[in-house]
Amino acid sequence: MDIVYIRELQVETVIGIYDWEREIRQTVSLDLEMGTDIRAAAATENIENTLNYKSVSKRLIAFIAESEFLLVETMAEEIAQIVMEEFNVPWLRLRLSKPGAVRGAKDVGVLIERGVKG
Image 1: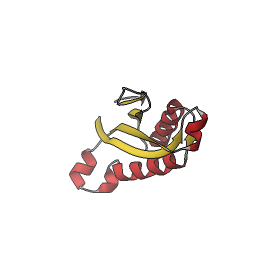
Image 2: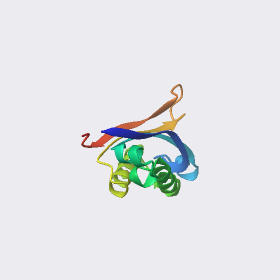
Image 3: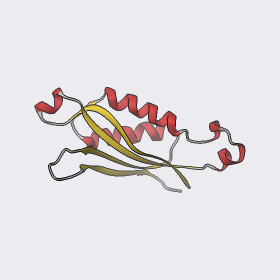
Image 4: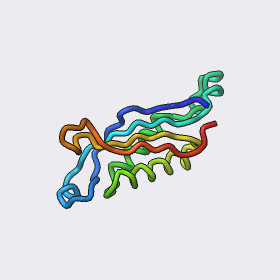
């Protein structure tokens, strides 16, 4: 299995459990690894034969920007479902973080893996 990835995609959104967090937009950052097979794209040099990271990025930016989740865990699950279902991805690893959410830490968040890596 090959991997198409997106690193440090940053999106402004409403995220958090505290009242003050519900009134502002914060940055979330995601790293996404998606299992796929790039051989057909490599052989044909046709974008239609691969997992288009630009299309995935645009879809996730729109989704995250419009969302208002309480927990990063919920957002991560929803992102995983979108990628797997809409882009036919059998396996993914997602790191979703809130930079600056904890004093003294660069970021905090979750790392999830879903599906079967073939």
